[in-house]
Image (cartoon, rainbow, N blue to C red; front, side):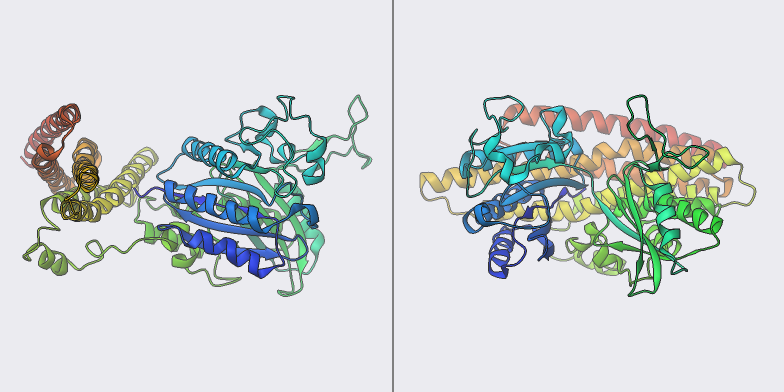
Length: 558
C-alpha cells in the first residue's frame, strides 16, 4: 500500500496573493508532493493549505513552506479574526493511507526539530504528537495567541517549546506542529427554510450538545453554580444549523474530527430520523473538500448491509453505493476522482489498468519488465478475487443465515483488501526492476561516483527483494481465505476456492524465486541471511496450506 500523509499548514496571511503564491510555490517545488487546495480568507487574514505526499516528501514540503512564511510574514503587524500565534500558525500531519497515527506523530516531531534547529522558530507539539497532556488541545498550546508570547515564562516547563529557542521571536512568533485525524467537512440540507429545525438537529447530534434544562425549562446548574451540559449523540462531531440563501434551504453543517469514530453515514442516518420527527426530510448532503477513501468504503458497506447484501465489494462499487446512498450529488456534483484524496493523487497504473491482452502482450515482449515478479503478484490478486467472489455469492444467497452472512461478508472484505495490495505489487515489482537497472547505469569513474552507485544499487536491490517478499508473505493469508471459502462457501463454488488456493501457491513459489534470484546482489551478508530465512519460512507455510487445501478440494469433489 502506498504511504501517503496529508499536511494542512495554516499561514497568517490571507490577503497578499504574492506571499501566498510564494509559499505554495515552495511546496510545489518538492518532488512527489501534490498541492490539493489553497484557501485564503481576507477577514481571518489566514490561508489554509492542503498538500499530500509520501511521508519524507511531505516533511520537506512543509519545511520549505514554513521557511518561506518566516521570511515573508511579519507577525508584528498582523491583524486577523482567527486565533494565531505565528507566521505558520499550525501544521498538522494527517494519516491518509499506509501510515499510522503514531507515524504521523513521529513525522511531526521530525519536522518540529528541523523547524526549531534550522529555522530558529519556537515549536510546540500538539494533539497526537503532544509531549504534555494540556497540549492535546490546540487551544491550550495557542493560549494568549501571538500577543501572549511575550509574557510566557519560557523557563517554566509548561511553556518551554519542544524545539527551537525558548524565547520570543518577534517577527515569526511560534508554531504548533502536530498529528490529528482527517477532518471531514460535511453539510446536510433539509426541505425547509426554517433554520430552527436545523439548529435543533445540530444540538442533538453534536458532541457538546446543549445546556441541560429542568421540567420548567430552566438551565440546570451543578453544586458550584456552573451550567450543566446535556451531551449530544456523537463524539468528535461539531455541528451548527442555519439557513443557506443560495439553496433556499436550512442546513446542518458538520465537522467530523475523527470519521473512524463518527462517520458521515451514521450522522446522516441520525439527521434523517431527527428531521422526520420534526416533519422535515433530508434532500441531500455535500462533502466539502476532500474525503478519505476509507470513509466512502465504510458508507458503502453500511448501506449494502442494510440492503441485505455482502459488503465485500470492490472499491469502485462501494464508492458508488456510498455516493448514491449519501445523496452526495444532490447538492453539488461529487466526482470521486476529484473528491477522494487517494484517487486524486493516484499514480498511473499502466499494467493493472491494461486489458488482459495488453498485459499479456507487455509480458511477452522483448523487455524484462514486467516479468515473473509482477505475474506472481497478479496470481495472488486473482486468488484473493476468487475468495471474495465465493464470499459474496454465499452471503448473497436467499435465506443465508445471519452468522454466515456476516462471516462471508467479512471474508470478502478481507480478500478485497488483499487483492488491492497485490495489484499494487504488480506495478511495484516492475518499477523496482527498472530502478535496479537505472542504478547499474550510473557513472562509476571516481571514488565518489562509485560509492554513490554502490549505495543506489543496494537500495534498489532491497526494493526488488522487498516487493516479492511481501507477495510471498501474503500467500498464507490468501490460502487461509481460500480454505475458509472452501469450508463455508456454497457447494457449487468449491472449485473456485480450489483455484484460489492454486493461484496463491503459484504466487508464493513465483515470489520466492524472485526473492532468491535477487538475494546474491545484496552486499549486506547479514541482511541476505535474514531475508532468506523469512522467505523460506513463508514458502513452507504456503506449501503446507496449499497441500492441505487441495486435499480437502479432492475430498469434497468425491
